[in-house]
Image 1 (spheres, one colour):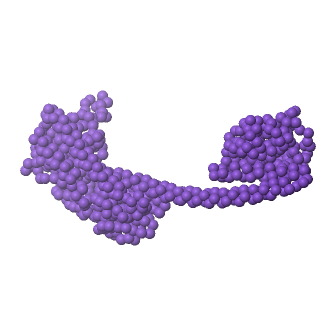
Image 2: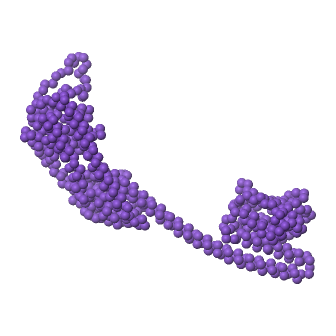
Image 3: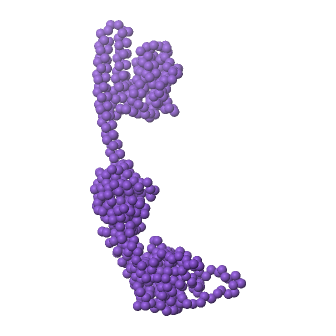
Length: 600
């Protein structure tokens, strides 16, 4: 589809409506020539419809310069919907009396006010003796004019003028409806074309790859003669486009501008002077600049359309005469002007569609980036899970070997205790056997499958005490009371806390209750950034608080590794041991208290 084909359908619809309107107003007013005149973007006007007799020549398709109806006159045409000049040979009447202060009164809205002498001379130069001008206003904007010319004086009655106002309003609404229909059809076409092109993109491929693979579909989005995708180094072009080096130069020039990512021009040579050298390749473009990590530029190009504009006389305004008086044009004979370096204009709907496409492509790029990031994160997580599985396997293997070694040592101690004849030696070997069994219990309980890494210390200690009570005897289950708050702790620190608790419980069984079961209270609490473990019994003690036995030395070493403190308080009867350690690991500052243990 060429640009000429896209603009012809809407133009034909408007010209058909203008021709019908000119015919209706000609019959209503009886003027020799009626033209429907539309204003262009530059202020000039073009005749879209005409109905006439043989008195006047045709002005169909003729253009009139913007100076024929200056800005001040257009403002008046918005206020006064109809203006009639019955004859150009009238004599203006003065406002009297001038002494009453009426000489400066504003007559803009008065139908009988006089006409500018320059305009009367303009009409005389055209051979027009009487005229009528009816405004066509669409959405509060002066869309165009219905201009009536007569070769002889002609008066329009009030009822005819009222009918002209009404018909002009009806025609304005029809023009607006037809333009809205053309606009709607163009927007619908552009939206469907955009969705068709982007819906076929490969979700797994990058946006740049999709743009290059679907270049032909994207080219059909906007009526154009050529399309190009310009990346950092590569250029993909189809149709009629400038040379690759010129496309890259345009891309670099576009990146220097601040156009919001959209550039549109129907006379590229004026905006980008190097383009004047190849209008047959590109005289107008619409470009989209995409702010990707590797920036992309999309360019739709239109070639030069050599236009021959037919003016109603030379549009260039003359110079004042020797007296400084400016006179209107005298000749309205057809005057042709050849316009070069221009392409068909890009309409508002196409510019809006370009902005929408840019938003879609940016969203696709962001989605693709998120997809790549998710894939990277997924791979990282999988790798981490694999490493954790390997770590878990190694920990289980280490735990298995540690358990075997501890069992071997426990069995050796048990054998030595049986063969020993010294009671004190037997007792020491038996005590060592219990401690090794407790250490094995701590290690086995912590390194179960669901306790690797970070553990819930309260749950861990609760399960640890249940197994320890089973080892010490079923009677302990009735005597043990635990109040544990949930605390999360790293696995290595939990091991040490478990060792200390196990040693305190074993020593309480041995020294507080002499092997029998007795009341034992265990409390775990969290205060600020510190953890507090309390073990209290109700036994009777008669021992050295500054003992230096194996158990005491082990407890002191473990508490020191935790950067904590351990204190003892007599309860009469019983004893309370309180261990306080920081929740987070930090180097010891040298002020941690490590008092001697109770049991030796």
